[in-house]
Amino acid sequence: MALTHAILALLVNCPQSGYDLTKNFEESVGCFWKATHQQIYRELAKLEAQGWVQPTTVLQEGRPDKKVYGITELGQQKLATWVAAPCDTMAIKEELLVKVFVGALVSTPVIQQQLLQHRQIHTHQLAHYRQIEAVEFQNFHALTLESKLQYLVLRRGIRYETDWIGWCDEALALLHEETEGKEK
Image (tube, rainbow, N blue to C red; front, side, top):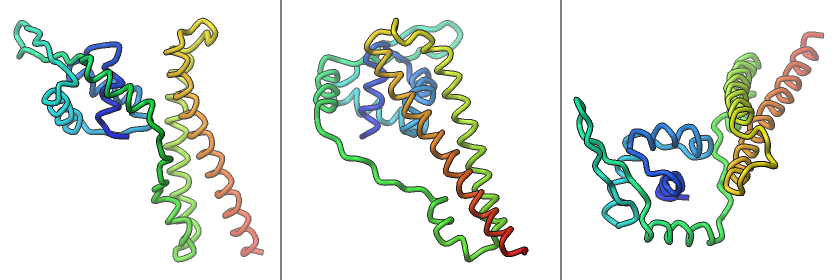
């Protein structure tokens, strides 16, 4: 997936300024696609040059005018073509897994600390996703198809974080058993 598609996806239903897009990016597709403020603005400029988005200038009092971007018909066509195309799975690139793989090079507490840090990060992210779930998706059966599809993406994020926490717990338990066995 290119950043292009993530931006277009956010503009499908709601024109947004670059600032709002950056903020909403982090709260929605940011759970599975990362981009900086600068990357988003560069991509918006490219999309505008291609005719996939169209900015409207909004006059503001006491502040510089802002551009609000909306997806064009051409942009919607390009996004729909992308959605319909088959996609590959993404390769896993997890630094922690490489560290655990060769963790015997350092003392067990060093690896345990790495695992605890990652467990904390994933626990925090899971809590964030659960909060979104509780606020945005209270009554699943009353949701529109669009909202149900977005909920499915959130559920994938919840399962991802839950799995990481479970794996960290499993790894920590194994290392604890290993440490206990050496002490006896």
